[in-house]
Length: 65
Length: 273
Image (cartoon, rainbow over all chains, first blue to last red; front, side, top):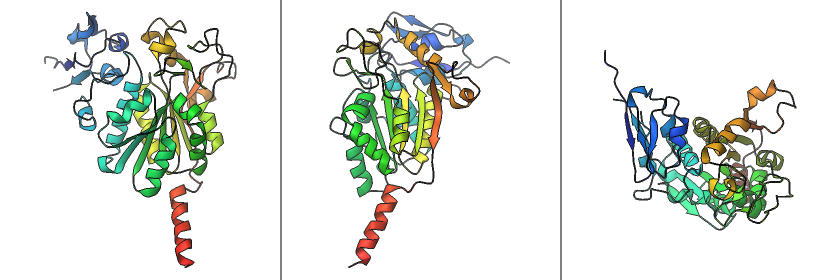
């Protein structure tokens, strides 16, 4: 069965580029693209929600269908 | 599943004013999750604050909120609670607002054991006013007013609260984001004055003066110094040197609560007519 991928939404309007989500992602899913965080490797995401939990700026939303 | 923070945030208020990497946002998320798990009603919840970075928090939350004078959050909140004892009153503020300017109000709110929850975001500095040292700045650390190192020893907010008579005292850190909402929820449910100290980071005015290269380094420091209370029981005094205990540090359910005691006073006074 094909693995269902979560959806990671990054709201650039809110992101302040603090790097917290990128550094504390255990699977190295996110990266900094210019000023904002962006998704680098969605395949590796295990939906642990650490990025959403730690983002101080309400800029990340992780949803599982 | 993503948590829906939007229902607790005033429309159009985000992005907030806090600097990149500031932990206040993490604490605000924790508070929102705690209020949501407890199913608090917006019209029965009051978030009260004084002045400072952390005290800007009520401006973003969609419930009854009060942004008051510097350090006077506890005084205004006591007024709210006495007028409407059925309200859930939550105070938020920083370490300078809570323990320096509002130190007197803080200890007396603890002493009264009035049923409120005080969330103190301790970032070791006065961030908003330009990085002056606060009563929580550790000895030797630098601030804009102590460029050669702070000679004063810092306050231990949790011990201060326990000593002053608070009946629920807990401590968390901005790094341990998962724990924050659980501590705050337990504190709100406690009948009596509860204090939750959250160790926080201020990369802008504290971090750069004290040789922290990045927000990540500050977050990792919080991770390193925090020791859960249960783990600390098995550690020696030597191992605990420089560490900070986290979790529920003190709980006492036996002390009478102030609004209940005051209702009895009203009853006695009316019977005496």
